[in-house]
Image 1: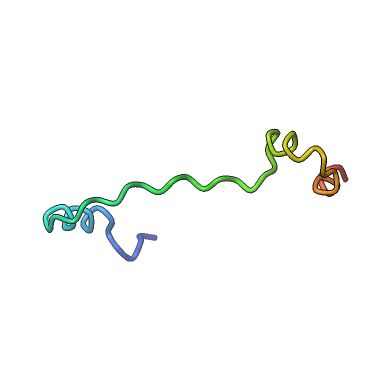
Image 2: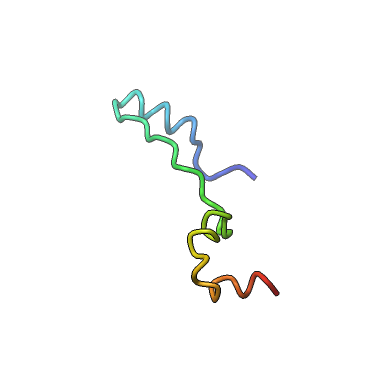
Length: 53
């Protein structure tokens, strides 16, 4: 299934019109608790109770 808008055409038209191209957005971070978060929040064990089960 193709997207409703053609990104390549839209970007080409924007460059012709002089609109600066939008930078790519940052990748979404996964909503997982990282090792760093565990270290940072080690004094709050109640945050990690659901992970231990």
